Image 1 (tube, rainbow, N blue to C red):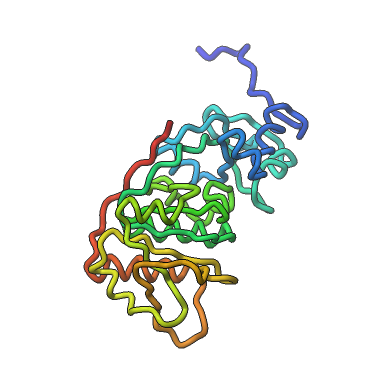
Image 2 (image 1 turned 180 degrees about the vertical axis):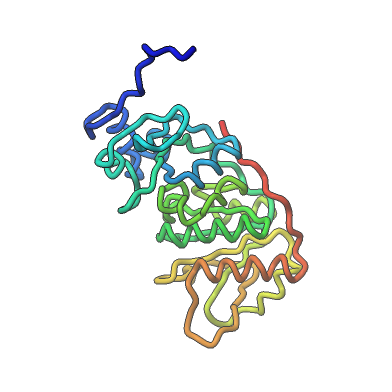
Length: 254
């Protein structure tokens, strides 16, 4: 017999609610770093995180959404919480995993400031069995916009933050620079041992003082490519030309 005295879940109607306020702070990079948490939005991304074992600390859902264990909120509160202009919900607070060390062929985001490009780069790396390293001046790999662009790829590859290029070389990586002109054909990547392929920003590229072991240039009929597109082409060039593709590795979830 159903207990008729059971109360319905509390509906949060104010953006000043303590839990809502704390979650909304995670829109800012500084707060994500301080709390070691981020926001993820939408059922697909939340389900992908759950399948991969990533700890979701709180989930906020609209009143009519059937999400077990979620905090029910109004449309106004959801718009306040969600990283997108037209939120679909639910929105969850997720603990950011510890920065693991890359250990296989990697795409390196070198001062890549656009979170959309970074998320797409992460997606390409995961698709081709590669890891991802991100320099300090790049966008936050765990920002909500980066996560959306990654479309769940964050949960099936290793992401190392604040990476140092000299340290990668000392760890045995072959430093490969993607340059607009004058580099070798990317087919050389197929025989390159443990490449770390550096992708610079579209505005500035890679610095002149960088001394890579190899430079590669994608032969194209236009002046330049989108950074994330270039990353995907070079990842395919590595695996398709004979580079070893490895299955995804789970990051450290401590």
